[in-house]
Image (cartoon, rainbow, N blue to C red; front, side, top):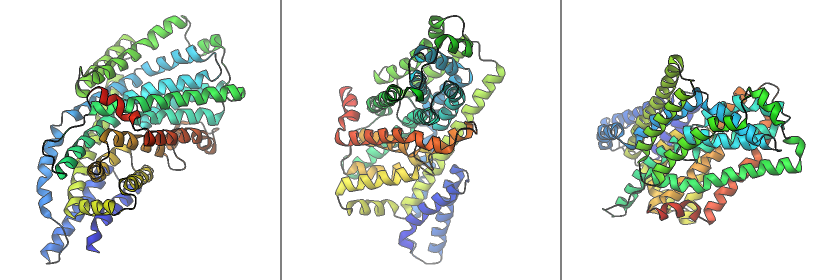
Length: 469
């Protein structure tokens, strides 16, 4: 029984999290409990197959977390996204896009997709994007005669784009973890001058698949509007302008609502992709730019600023506490020989690296029903990442596959997080079954993207290779 302690540890963690206990405390508390158990059994003279020496590495792990320059981008990107949301910059952007495309069939759906893409890129948090887009756009879409399933499906799907559209914090965290896993994999193979993979490389790798998904979403909405006009009718631009309270003309609204936030996000992403700035430096520019926009729009008072800083602090402390708990969990897992167990399991698996990759993707997909992206990034990826990378997988391709896999998991009924978030803000007249029906076409599109990446990995690896990644 003791040789299966790593599996028991992982299972207990999942059970504790399913009961709703705080993630960071669940990870750290359960890991400490199992560490104490291993030390207690050794004190009793029982071989628990527990190497307590791993625990001595915890102070260095914590110091590494606190001094990690890449992770400084997390609070700054969160601040940028929350500022765009709380100061109504995102609302003005949605109004501008709705007036630009609303006069065509399916135009509101296309507007929601584009704005959701920009919001997802700036926050990278599924819940925040889905809730924001649900509150801002769902009432307008339903009032304009949109099919309930099409409206809710579009909002849920665009909310999950934060997993794959750079520059999101999800990719920042995944890039940092994969960088460490890639270096560890090379050291395990005896390569003592390891190559590195950066967050910027992952951003470049995510750009083409992410934009392809956006194009697929918009194409689907346009196709539905063309085949079944009653599901996505055109809106009268003048009526829509009066309803939204914009009477100064479309040109002025576009100049005010569309150009500044798009320029900000393009500048942040462009500076990273061009190598002009690191993700951390670009996140600082993005946060400052969002602050300037909020002041220019005259939507930032002391109460709003306090709310923005409080939200940013809450998200940032959550991320770093989870990272600390995950570091402790990882050490205890390895102390029980979990890393060797997983390595032997993968090496003995039918199909070699292909079979191992399929199993890992399936496990990550199922874990996406009960764990958030942050927990999976910090807990699961450090365990399986070095092993898969040592088997020859490209780190950028693996990162993009994991991101889209989780994006699909968060959208899949009946446990997808995005569905719960939208259900919480949707009016009672919207049945849950309509939300479930609405996301199915988008799930199929994301599965199609996973297949395209499987057979054409260049979709993720070509752009980083052009820039030397």
